[in-house]
Length: 144
Image 1 (cartoon, helix red, strand yellow):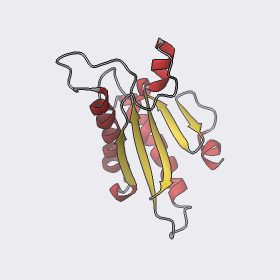
Image 2 (cartoon, helix red, strand yellow):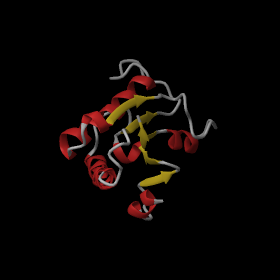
Image 3 (tube, one colour):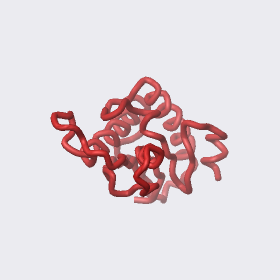
Image 4 (cartoon, rainbow, N blue to C red):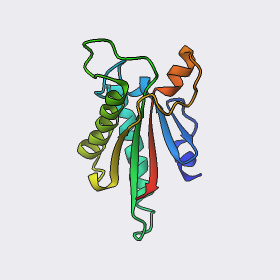
C-alpha cells in the first residue's frame, strides 16, 4: 500500500503485489544490458522511493532488494553479445544493481541481482504482446 501511495498512477512502472515491475523497453534497448538515459531516470526515481521506505524499516529486519531480470522466449541471434536469454537477464539485473549502488547510494549489502531468462513468463502465449509483457525487470523488497 505504501509503495502504491508513493508511486502514484504511472505507466512506466507498476506495483504488482510486493514488486516494482518495469518493462525492459523502458530501461534498455533491445538485446542490450546497458541502462538507457530514460532507464537511469527510472532507477533514480525508484531508488529515492526505496531509500525513503528503507528508512522506515525497523532495524531488526534484515532486508534486501531483489532485482530480477526476465526476457521473452526469442533466442539470441548468432554472434550477439549475450549467448542466451539467461545471460541477458542476469546482465540487465546486474546493470540495475550497479546503477543503484554507484549512482544512488544503495548499499550493495542490500541488493541481489538475479536472472531468470525466459523461464518465468507472466504470459505464456506466443504473441508479440505476451513477449513484451515477459521482458521486464522486477524489484522486490524482501527479508533476507
